[in-house]
Length: 268
Image (cartoon, rainbow, N blue to C red):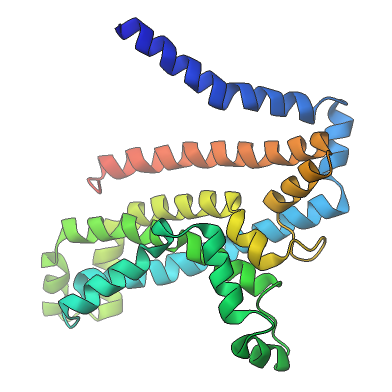
């Protein structure tokens, strides 16, 4: 029975992961290396990869800054009432309960070109939906809880004794953070950042709704793969998808390294 379960596990692993990956490689290199490189060097592919990189970079920076700050507020903010803390926690976890497509649709309903707020920004020459800012907002909505849920348990575990001691010795809040808090949470932050980058790279639903999938303007790598599949350009779709898969594998290795290092440092 145990052998059967092991064989079944390997069969599922091969069917769901290895077989599609092999098929993707065969599709990408069906016409040889030159065909794969030609698919990746298309103007629309280069632009989509550039937009993806830009969205990932901005979202990662914003998540790192506001994620760490909000984590500290939730754990150390004694001034917050219990109700406010529970409400804020529920809002943070909202992306886990709401489909990314619904999240993107909510942004369109709130900031779209036909809305009051969207029209106000458009009159100021600043378009949100069907433009880069909307794509950043949609990706932020999807990824925002990831870093926070990594940092909060670390802050709860380390307690406040060292921070209180630093304050007693006359250290400013900023000095206390960099000298005491940051060394204790940095591996949790790094792990959350890797999760954020991986999730941002693969985001599709919210981006598709908010961006409009406009070629050479708001198209990301994932939406270009979708368009290539819709146009039966399987070789091009496979080449671009293979780049995303390789990026995800590298991020997975980095994530495992960060997890092991954090475990050795006593973070998790």
